[in-house]
Image 1 (cartoon, rainbow, N blue to C red):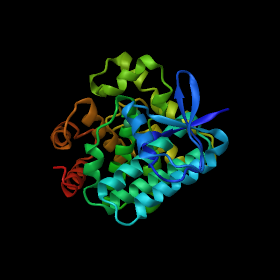
Image 2: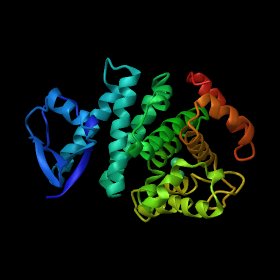
Image 3: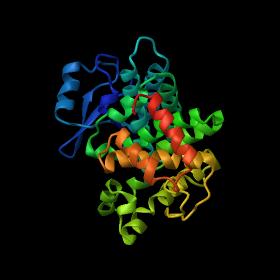
Length: 311
Ligand SMILES: [Fe+2]
Ligand SMILES: [Fe+2]
């Protein structure tokens, strides 16, 4: 039997399961809770305490998982009585699942799940003051760094894009591209992964070449599929470029949307490669990143950070 992963934290206790939950233990898949039954809090906590990250669902039940994720997403965005923190956490979990699924298979069904998660994240960030603060304040496991970075960039870039009054379609494309921009990092050789934790400007020329391959790898996983738009592809391939032309593609002409995504990617990368707070990262941006990005865009970034209580 084939399985698809489902992050444990996505499943809430004491609700009727619409699919079987398996765990992977000592090289075997074991059924932990059956479809139609409840997963008790006690059983769920046991796994969380053991640092188990994923459930596994039989592949033939994947449509039920998709429905479950859509329901969780809908509740996070539109449900009544949730705090900003609960909305951000729930929408982030759905987004994280969608990135994992895209890492496994970039088919149309998984792409649509990721697209809906990206749009949902955009909505939660747009409608809830301080949501960005929650997103940036979330701690992540080392294994989740790439996923959390992608979610942060999605929330941040859509917020900046709303502020810049980009068209609705454009903001949705930025959201989708942001969530998937680094899926190429899941495919690069394992020995190159530590480069993700390193500042691009501090890499040796040889490290830059190795790291610089990932936007193309991300694009190759997605391109040639008619359900993915050219705009999304162009945003992904240019996410490490800036106006100096020193990015992997040596491109110095970016559209406003591409520049917005690239700036937010660079900003969030600073937060975790340098372990800086948004306020400290911004201090560096307003001095050292002039020339890499338009001054006006950097100033708009400041406005958004202030509005969100991050400066
Ligand atoms: Fe990247
Ligand atoms: Fe990135």
